[in-house]
Every structure is written in C-alpha cells, then in structure tokens.
Image (cartoon, rainbow, N blue to C red; front, top):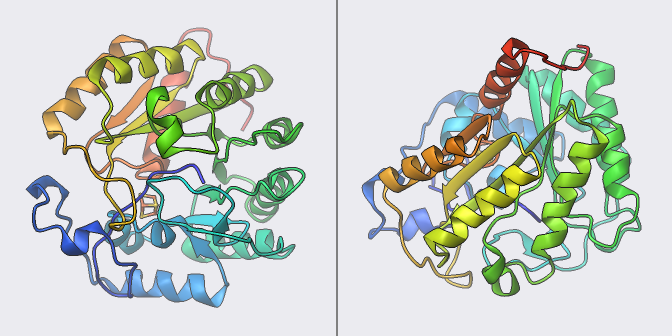
Length: 320
Ligand code: SF4
C-alpha cells in the first residue's frame, strides 16, 4: 500500500498498538491527545456495521482521535491484506480477500451517514488482480457520485506497477484529486518499498496529470527514515517537474518494532523550512508538519487548492 499514516494512540474504540503507546522518548510535538467524543465511538461502530476497513485503524494513524471525533475517515478498499511488504507500513501482508462487489455501495452509505462532502479512498496493493484494483476505485467513485452528485472524491492509489490501463481507468473516472505517495527518497526504495520503483511512481503522477490536466495531483513523503536533506530537495524538484499540485510531508513513526527504525525525529521548524522550499519551487499547496498525513485535513486542503485555482488568471477548472 502507498500511504504513510502510522503510529497511533490508544483510546475509545480499541486501536492498534503502535509507537505512540510506547513512545516515552517521543518528542512532545508528537504526543497526541485522544478525544473520547462520542462521535469517535459512533464512527467506529458505523465502520464495523458497514464492514469497511479504514486506513486510520489499519495504519495506526496518530490523528485518528482528531479525525474521527470530526467524523472524518479514510476508507481502505479492496480488503485489509496487502500484497506488498513495505518496511514502514502497518497493514497486514499475505493473501488478499476477494474483491467485494458491494463495497462501493457500502462506502457511499458510510459517506452519506457521516455527512462527508469530500471523501478520501485508498486501498491495499493488489498485485494479484489483473487491474491492480483500478475498477474497484472506479466503482467507488461512481457509487459516491450517484448518491451525492456534489461530493468530491480523492483517491490515494497504489502504483499500479505492471497493470496496463489501470491508471487510465481511474483517471477516466475523474477523481477530484489523484494522490500517489512517493513515500521516501529513491535511495531508500530498495529497503523501504521493495515492490516499488521511484521512477515508475513519479511517472504515474506525470501520466495522470497528462490524462486529466484539470484534475489535481497530490503526493507525499515521510521524513525520519534516514534521508538526507539534499535527497529530499531533489524529490521536491522531481514532483514539481511533473506538476504535482499538493505536497504532504510528515514524520515517519514506527508502527511496531518489526518495522523500519526511526532514523531521527525532525523538529517542527525543519518541516516548516521544507514547506518554504516547496513553495519556492511553485507547489500550489504544501502541508508539512510532524503529524501531516496524506488525508489529514484533506477536505480543507482541497478547498484551498480549488479556491486558488479559481482565482488564478486563465483558470481552467472543471465544470462542477
Ligand atoms: S489523517 Fe487520514 S488516516 Fe489518519 S485518522 Fe485522519 S483520515 Fe484517518
């Protein structure tokens, strides 16, 4: 899978054990307060009732208490078992479940019950499927729009490596935001993303932008895995070169001792400095902080991006 929401805190409902549970040495800016708001419990109950997986839980996201108390969730489609084994990711690896044809409708039901106006959909990697799961993304987008035509949809996809036509199929469904995370610098791909290829992932983002220039593209990286500053800046250059609109940068947190070790915790000021570097390169929108995750405040970021484009001279926005 291709996301970096990770490391959580305990609370109501029960959450996966993660770095936050044991993180006495964790810097104060990463210690999250867990809300006990009833909406958090309600959100958990809704996901179970509708049989939906969330990346918030599966990846043990530190922002779960905050997001869920605001009834924001990111649904992880195509099962809870991934065909890849990324060194930073908490999602189970193994033989995946069959594709559930009713999942898109249940996702739309959840979005309606939660009152979501902007939905983020992600998935496990499905290298076992001929289309990498692309058609299920399409079905989910269509189900959401059939129920709520004004809804906006953001997809956070796998890399669809060796899946001819998959990216094209998802792009043709015209998600409002197409996100694919680079996750880390190319030098660390072999150890961190053994099934992936940096050039391919970058190429996917470039291709999607060519397929749908009026749609927004988005990508993100984690810091603290051992990358060097120059390598990070080179990734920013690469992403800007392929016209990515929205960049997210967050701190890697180790989900369990079996996962890649944290090389270091970056100070919040370093995240701010990377944000400045990214803005100087021309990214229309940048979210960079220790707790930034791909889907954290995704609706607000999308709104800002759209507003900025609408105000720009020669704006070429999509029809609503
Ligand atoms: S940041 Fe994303 S993955 Fe984490 S809790 Fe919020 S919506 Fe879920």
